[in-house]
Amino acid sequence: MKIEGFKYHGTNQAFYATYKDGAWDEGVMSDSIFFEISSVAVALQYGQSVFEGLKAYRTKNNDVLLFRPDANAKRLKGSCERLLIPPVPEELFIKAIKQVVDANRDLVPSYESKGSLYIRPFVIGTETVMGVRSANEFLFGVIATPVGSYFKDGFNPISLTTTPYDRAAPNGLGHVKTGANYAASLYPKHLAKQKGFDDCLYLDPKTHTKVDETGATNIIAITKDNQFVTPQSKSILPSITNQSLQMIAKKYLGMDVIHRDIPLHELKDFEEIGACGTAAVITPISRIHHEGEEFTFESYEKLHKLYDLLQGIQYGDVKDEFGWVIKV
Ligand SMILES: Cc1ncc(COP(=O)(O)O)c(C=O)c1O
Image 1: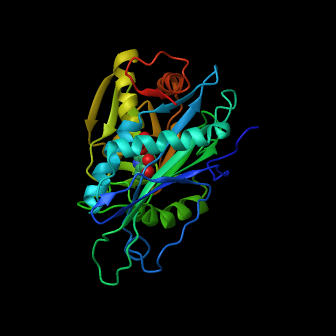
Image 2: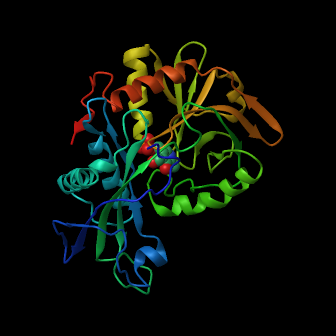
Image 3: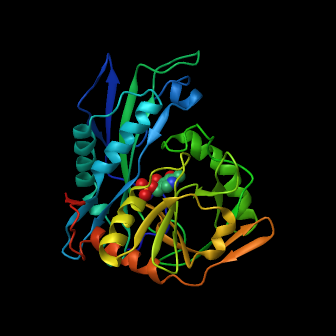
């Protein structure tokens, strides 16, 4: 069966561990995605919540592969530190992910469908607290569900519009995977969709002159002379997909990888522009609208090569020379 879209399509089992009296317990499996929580838990009232997103893929031989869970464990640690949450030890994180994938093995979509099992680890402050302060009790959960494409099905271009709103502040939480950034993105995305765009493109929050990212993906830009350019910004999430693509671009396509500011007006000089992330993989961008100005992109050749190589590694068709995939 083909799984349509990036939606919750059910689960078999989830994992929950709790932090109390200064330590994480070993956690338990549960057949429910529901749990009881205080109405005044810090996560609900003050947004003390961080999360991750990664995927498991079914290969042609019916194996199930995880892609770089160690990188997600490290990013979650950074997010926890910024939100004053006790970091989840990497061993506990990896153990939980493997247990959840194993318990949901039958839900990993078939190789042919090109779907995947999306895994959502999260940590929330659960203590009942009235004044603004960090919780002393936390829940680490991992749920998983089969998903299809985030944007359009397959390798199909999308259109974006810039927005006068910001998802993050200049010295805020943009580099952290926390609920607040996504709450801030709901309204601008709604407005972009109302105007017929697939999503909005955030500009750097300090000057509004440079490209940052979308609400769920980094931006990559390819030049005519084989450069792979991606924004250098403190307010974007360090994307594991982007970092992986940079290594693929260097090794397999001989590209120069450059981290730098991308002034908006420079968009017209790029040959190809893409949005990348775990959910979106690489989605080519055909059009970016900015205050009455249009930037259009017709070529997706290099992006397509990058997409095929990345997905090839993730689905076990291309030899993993980086040590990224783990069989569960
Ligand atoms: C704001 C934002 N940027 C970029 C990404 C892409 O990151 P990754 O490639 O690690 O999924 C995500 C998704 O996690 C995101 O939410």
